[in-house]
Amino acid sequence: MFGSHHNNQRRKLCAIGGPQNGARTGTFDSTLSRQAYSSSSIRSISSRAYTNGEMCRNPTEVNMSQIVLPCHANYCGELSAGQLLKWMDSTASERHAGRSCITASVDDIHFITTIGVGQVVNIAAKVNRAFTSSMEAGILVSCEDLFSNRQWKVCHAFATFVAQHTEAGKVQLKQVIPRTQAEQMEYSLAAERRRMRLIHAEIINDLLSSCCSQTVSERLDYQDAVPAERTRVESVELVLPPHANHQVSTFGGQIMAWMENVATISASRLCNAHPTLRSIDMFHFRGPSHIGDRLVLKAIVNNAFKKSMEVGVCAEAYQGGEPLRHINTAFMTFEVLDNDRKPCTLPRIRPEPVDGKRRFQEAIAREKIRLDRKYIISCKQSEVPLSVPWDPCNQMYLSYNNVSALKMLAARNNWVLTSEKNKVSLYTLEENQMLCFKVETHVAVAAEQVFLLLSDLRRRKAWDHHYQECDVITDSDEDDTIYRVVTPSVTKRGKVQDFILLASRRRPCDSGDPYLIALRSVTLPAYPPTEDYNRGEVLCAGFSIWEEENTFTKISYYNQATPGVLPYISTDIAGLSSSFYCTFASCSAFLEENKESLASLPTSTL
Ligand code: COA
Image (cartoon, rainbow, N blue to C red; front, side, top):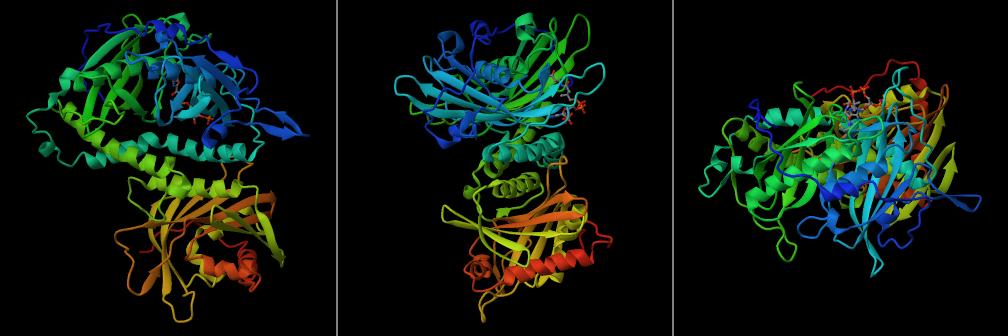
């Protein structure tokens, strides 16, 4: 975020001081002691499973409880976000690997509430999934009021830790075995989140390069704007043993705390008030830092939106006369709250020439990504509108949403077997006024071949008479394709229906995973609904394909029935027809006929 100009004047503007002393004094619960959770989201981190009637605890789970003392708080008597980040990092690391780990990255964190002095912070962390040398930890922070016995959620974060290489090379971590439905869901979603974080930098770069051609000059002419130079902050910290693990690597949480400290000062300079940290964008620790390093921390306000501002913070390290090493860059969003805790309108910023204008422009692009990510990813599935407008910038998030919705549906364990015929089983799940169904069958065809044959929706006409027409509209990337599908009218004289479907394909992340083909509706400006067709919508549907033996494969088709789809299936569920059995019997026949054929993933024909 900073330009090539490097300011050599290193000032120690601020020290973390008191709070850091409390960083490692937390109480590590050996059992999950707190029962009185007030919300289901808080309850969801709890990972207790019952074996032979006995409660057992997820072995990777670590709990920390801290009472917030004045030395942990900021000027407003609220827990400093930096201190909280240190506690979160230290709670989550090292439990599963049994060896020294470093923080590789932390996904977006949204702070929902602040925590006051005298309140208790409860941090629960557990490993959701181990990959090769890396593992994802889920960290849930809640606040507890000791007087009222109330608890509420403060934030939820996902951090990736990497086990340090040994002399023999890269470490292979032991696998996490999910035992509950919630753990199974997190295990499955962790693979999808990993995929997103590994291409995060690429997505951001693509977006930034496409947006930088737009002009910003009309936004820069405000007379009352605060010059961005005024918000520039630079500070130096010396890494001492309490800031590092026994392998002398600096704790990621400590670096985050130092970064938050300079970012807060920078934000205060824009608004001449005490800002509150609202969110931190996903970031990656690019290189290690060790005891004896000096960390140079630099922050500047990149852009001020109406009610929030983005501060860019950069951490670089050096020892002696060595050149600076880039450790991390993070983008933090701050607000200023009035007496009613409502965000105030902020002054505008006048960026510095060249690099300042670039950062100003890039902050606008990141604000768009932030909204997309929050809206599409963090939203509960039931709150996401049926058809989300697709554009190249949000394609990754829609694809994530598509696959994660299917994974969540597949992980449910309360499916009820409704009927069975010709080796095809129909299951239903009724919940919250939503009807979902699952059709399951087995075929003697290799899973990979089933995946390839079912991935190309244009071939579905061969076995599913509901698919009258199917065309590829666009191949957004090698894993995602958008189709237009035409299906017959539900009633005799009704209009035919069309659907704009995003199909997202995933190969297994490791041997225990299925192949997936997830389907959901999206909207495309070039394909609006037309007079001649009823536009149907699919919220969540798709296939999960499990290799059971060498060439024996289990296929599960899922559908969260929306009004457009319900009439096709309700007669089957009620036992009035058996069209789904016929369709899936014909699917099996199609797969077996084509088991040796050369199948490939679809490519655009339009
Ligand atoms: N987010 C999450 N995981 C990431 C990642 C990211 N942005 N980048 C890499 N990884 C994972 C890889 O997926 C891989 O996991 P796997 O072994 O389970 O497949 C693991 O990190 C190692 O990847 P590898 O390709 O061998 O190394 P790399 O050159 O990409 O380096 C780090 C990755 C994290 C080791 C490296 O960037 C680093 O050392 N960063 C500094 C970490 C640190 O010191 N943190 C403490 C604060 S300074």
